[in-house]
Image (tube, rainbow, N blue to C red; front, side, top):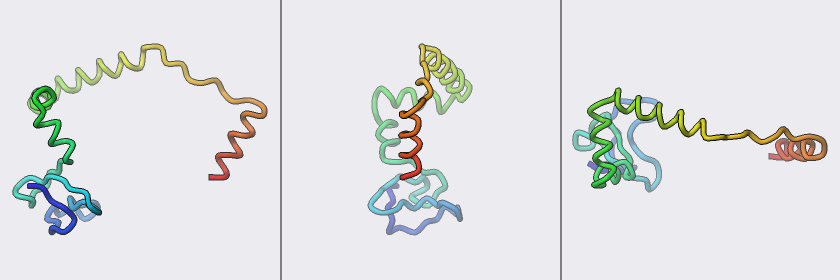
Length: 102
């Protein structure tokens, strides 16, 4: 069930709860009185014909999710990322001044 800020929070979570702030909406299981929350964007992915397949597959096999995520993360971190060089001289001074102004 989709809930908004006007509904009663039945989650029992004293820190965050499942009640959205402002005009935001979200889905909550068990007719809006459950303990699991999904954003509207999560539901859109779940209902999508292509992404929905992957969501269902990973929901049923957590080890496959971990293995696939690990392989993708390893690949993306090894494609040649080079961190920027350290700032020196005037550039470093200006950078540090900007940090303290904020």
